Length: 156
Image (cartoon, rainbow, N blue to C red; front, side, top):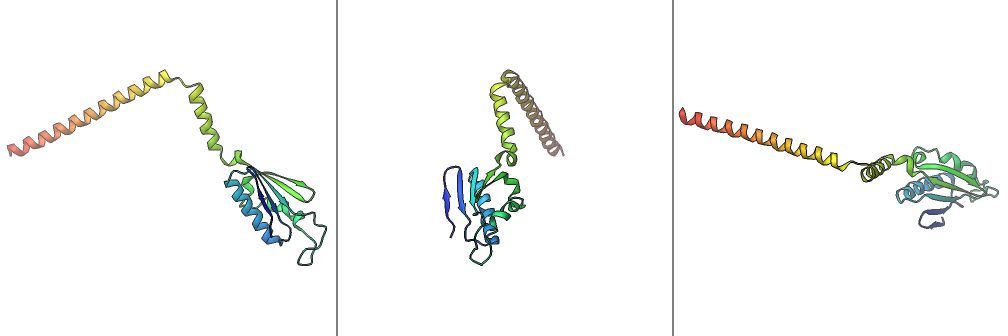
């Protein structure tokens, strides 16, 4: 059974006693779930691979773990992975996947700091006046057209 520990920004998953494919699936799912929960660091305990596991083979998770980080499901979520004695720390990348948020925040900062509101108000006022003028012209055109049709129907 896996030991699963969670704090605010860090998760720990013990992969001991898992077979390779089950452990890989758990790693992938944990990375995706942690990413969506805004958890930045995940500690995966693999062991150092110096003992015989439950299916009578030497533990291999410690050696194969880095190759899992290039899986298409998760590679875009990972900033980097650091190897330690018996475990890995996986750092998730929030900058690369959400650049639009940074652009929006920069634009908001621009609006707050550098935006010339006077010019904006003048432009907005001119737009509103032009819009009202255009609507008035359209209304008058429709009104005149309807009256002409009405008068034409009365005459004939």
